[in-house]
Length: 637
Image 1 (spheres, rainbow, N blue to C red):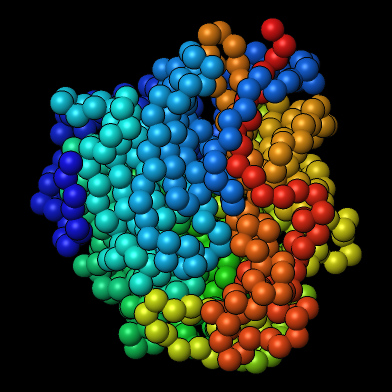
Image 2: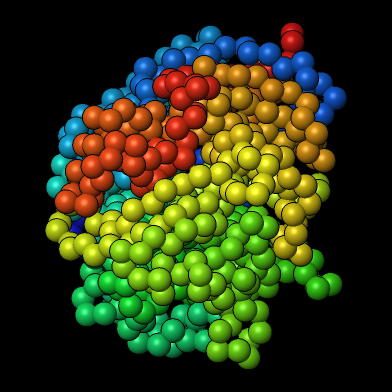
């Protein structure tokens, strides 16, 4: 086993063209993703479509689905990932302590191996929004190296496990410390590409500076690291050739729109999903909120937080960027998945695009080679913080959202409670990934339908301590259907909602579409639901706990199955998962985050705990409770 501590961020090898072995490994994974019997990547494929060609389960027989088997993970709190399946073996992990299981599908789900890392419990309280993890990744064997299962742990350790035995092949620390002292954490699913694996970092609510790092699969050494903020040498930006909306970004653009050294604690963390285009050799991902949540304290656009990046896979150099929410005032992290679609017809012309449903409530369609902005429209009509995104390339506001002064927390000022902002901080959609069907050319999107009151206040930075600087209350969108979520079908070529299904709570699970003309998703109450391509409900089943995991499908012994993890938690379920619905738990949270500004009123303390989610989702406790279970569905024998 090789244990590494990261000290250098760019290797000479990263500047060289990829080796034949790297190309071969890449092609293996692409071919495996094309075989629908597998679910080989967390989002199904490099394009993040979450679409399967399997059609044995279809719109006519899905009503007959039944539970085939289930498995207790042994861990409570939020299960935000989903299982991988390859060659008769299922792999998945849990929230902290991040146990990894390999189950034998040929032998009644027998545990082939179990890996349970030993992590410092001090990591738990610095994980912003529950102790979630979004899944493991698979790397095919190459030369003498065995096939790997890669897990990115809460303490920021990236570990490579032998896929057959579960033994550690190598591990590396991605953050600076693994004891939580700098409040860095790991929650994202790794992405394997070529001969590398990519991971990000979490912790913007503690002033962690965001970055993505590519590690070599052979031994865990660093290939390259790219920061979200800072000088060009650290953001890997080329001032003349990296573009933003078609124009060069200029020198040290990751510093120029910050005051003083604020970029050093500027957030822009990278805890979402990653996509990869093998032909363009580009990696796509988004960055999160700037630190602190108080916008008055950090004037400027705060680049490159809230930004979509397209980076060269070999060197990490940014080809183009697009900042969706300059000078964020609402915590609208830009980390949601980027879905790659070929030949989307826009204004009568086929374009290869990247589609992004942002937390800020706008859905963006961009040319994925150049970053040209093609479409930007609201995917919830109740979004009110901005009127629109300026689409005129000749305007000095091109690409910028046009902020409504009434809902500007900066313009209204510190210690002023701005009310009625839609969406809430958790966005019209958080990280829960959407799905795309090439049959309908529509996107199927799990959404939040929640608004908020937001009061920023002055806060100082101390390493390892909360660096939030705002009090937030959340509630269902007023003058609507009364619920806190919708599941929608969306046409990204036009920026139009096609249909919408109201839900009582946010839809916090990842969606799945199949060639059987069925769309699956889960609900916070615990239902897995199947609808047809017109949104008609065909099937539902209530699992033991709320679903915030991602619905996946696979084939084994000639039969198609649907699999999902249930276990309520995440940001929306943090009241249940973190024990914040009780006065004692909420008060402890307030003391840690708000300090001397902690509310003395018990109702307010509970209502604004969990960055505002506890009060908003308090009723969830009437419908579900903590759990941790894998449920597998199939048709009757």
